[in-house]
Length: 168
Image (cartoon, rainbow, N blue to C red; front, side, top):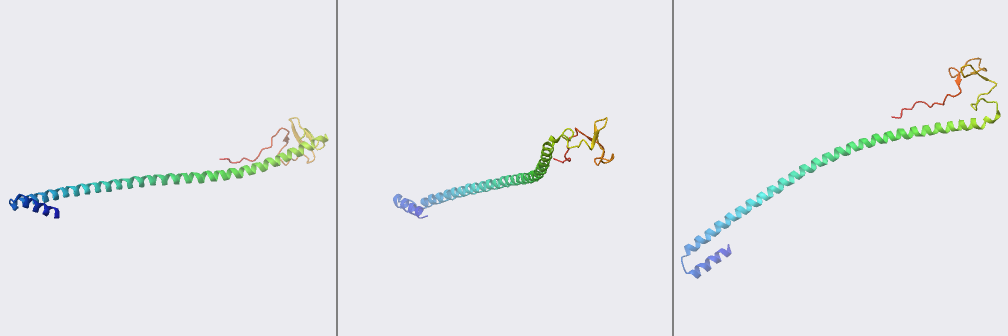
C-alpha cells in the first residue's frame, strides 16, 4: 500500500492535474490486484484440493496393495506350515525305513555268513533235517507236526514285505 500511495503522490505532483483521476487509477489498480489475488487464491485452493485427492487415491491404492500382500503372505505361510508338516512325516518315515533296511541287511548278512555249513536249503536258513518240500514247492515244518505259525507253508521265493506305509 505504501507504494500505491507513493505512486499517487508522484503522479499527482508530477501531473499537477486532478487528484480525483489519480484516485480512480489507484482504485482501479487495487481492484485489479484484488481480482488477481482472488484468482491466484482460487488456483492455489484447486491445486491443494487436487493434491489432497491424489494423496487420497494413493492411500486407497497402497491400502489395496497392502491387503493383497497380506493375503498372499497368509496363503504362503499356510502352505509353508503344510509342507513343513509333510516334511516332518517324511523324515520320520525315512528314519523308520532306514531302521528296517538296516535290520534286513543284518538278517541278509547273518544268512549269508551262516550259509557255508551245507545243512541249509538254498541259503534260506531252513535246516534240511526239519523241513521237507511238498509237491507244490512249499516247505513243511516237520518238527511242529504240521502246524505252521505263518498260517501255512512258506514258499522259498516269497519276498520279505514291509508293512504298507501311507506315504501321502
